[in-house]
Amino acid sequence: ITKLETRGVLLSKSVDVVNNIQIKHEECNGKIAKLILDKFNKVISKNKGWENIKKINQVLIGETTNDDDLSSSNLNLDNYLSMKYAPITSVDVERSFSMYKNILTPNRPTLLEIGRFSEDSLSKYMVVDFFFFNTN
Image 1 (cartoon, helix red, strand yellow):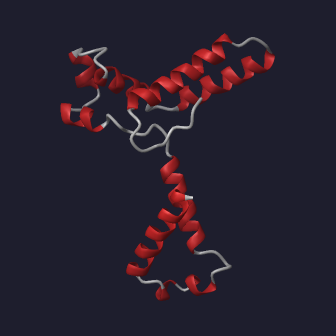
Image 2: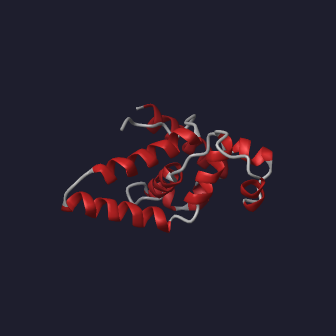
């Protein structure tokens, strides 16, 4: 599997990656392969949004235009179009939590006093932090 960037990846490409992983795991034999497939299927089945993502993807790629599929998701055409590049992971969110956690660490005692860290300074810090870690 090639590394996918979260920005600019079509939803259809992301869904294909997950589907291909499942197919490849189903083709594997052996005890460990079965354990991995079972874990994969448990994770997917717990993800309540996965079925919705697959339905949205089917509409976007033209596999279905069934009115039931469109109306059951409570989305209009604009909503579907806005999902064309929707990420299927929360990596960016997790990354932002890590960034915030690093702001208030014990090795930065001057930042522990929130009063010294203005909203403007925080905003600038986050921009610098984001670009530094995403360009290296």
